[in-house]
Image (cartoon, rainbow, N blue to C red; front, top):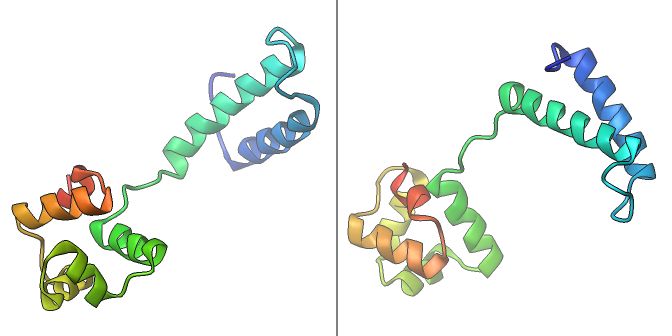
Length: 121
């Protein structure tokens, strides 16, 4: 078997991985048959998930909302932190406007957000 072909195989592999995780730990030798099986199944599952359950990159809006939550910021306090006016922040968060290059740089550096996410690339 070079790949998981369908959801039934995927479910079976996931079930077996759960069983193996109870047996294999950090002290299990790499050449142990259960350890080897766990690695093989994990790779098969990862490949299947990449195809059938891809994770898309987060949008700037999603990341800004998350950072605001993490930092306990309102739109007003975020605007002050970034040195921007509140209406511009509101437009960015609502998706009505994109940040300028200068604003994007400030957002990226101040909030530690990848430039690729801020610029949407």
